[in-house]
Length: 178
Image 1: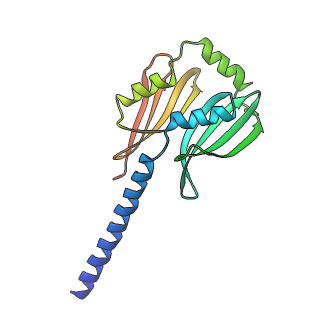
Image 2: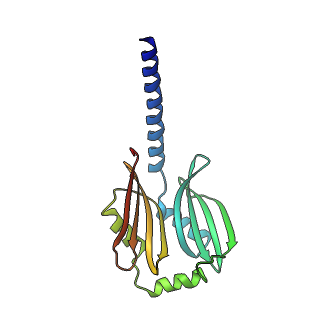
Image 3: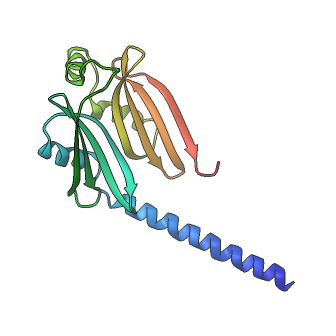
């Protein structure tokens, strides 16, 4: 009987710790500056074409990684997700083998009738109730798509939207209970 009580008590302590950790993570996410402010801060530092924005956890701190293409160079900016302070900027020569030149690729996108990031997010929000953590305009099988990742109350959701037709191509909800 004592053994059963000890095991039960240990289970309660462990579960309580998991709930506390999960709660503190949720609080941390509510205090982030958001993707729009992260992009704004990044573009003040490097005025180019934003390729992607992703919320990451680095050394226990929430950080936005913003990738920008400018003048045949790729920049990765690491922005504190609570203060918008730029922590680090990495610069390298654009050596993407799949694109001849990302600047010309960006020009090709502007020549097509693609929806804006904001429109893509609005479409996604009709399917997902959550916080946007990552968005990227990408070329996939000859068409432009927005790949997005959201954090929801029940886990993560990923959605792909055709940037020309506004069609939802893929939608995946990963519940934390799985």
